[in-house]
Image (cartoon, rainbow, N blue to C red; front, side):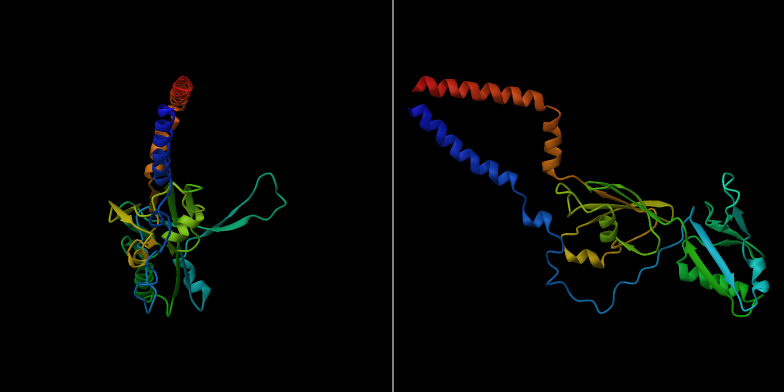
Length: 264
């Protein structure tokens, strides 16, 4: 009888401990926890991405007289599906590849270094140089291979192509269908290349302050990694030994049952 009471007493003490460690804290899960106390900003952060080596740029020069602007544009070409000769081919504009040294080869103007420039700076550079040939040229410049990668504890990890040139960390996580319950929200890693050097930066999205961070807006080719929390890591370790743990647990239950029965 005393053994039965002792076992029940130990079990009653153990259950609250198990419950305590199985519950996630609010501070580990909820986003923007201090947003009500965060200082208000009069203006949203302005952010312009920098052109990098291996970027593909679409640059179109326009003028009042299209014929004058024509020499400054790459030729378009037509793609035709050989299996559907009756379908008109699509018109495709050639793109400029930024080489490993940051240069593009531009018609008439020759080699121009654009790596490290913001989009507005590259447009201004082209306008200044082309103005020597054309009055009031209009420059349309876009990065065509803007992409980011989201890895780790998100619902759908992968590489995502961005149609615009401005995407936030929260938008990137939303594209990946948000973090799983096992993702660490206070230690998100952003890998970014700056002037050819990889940088590693941590962001805590449980605090609204991260909106003022230089990593609130992502750059092309950024990698976002969501680290698993302790529960997921421990669960993974348990998962590899599930059979052994079940066997040991069954044996312990059998022994306890025998002890309790014998005590009666």
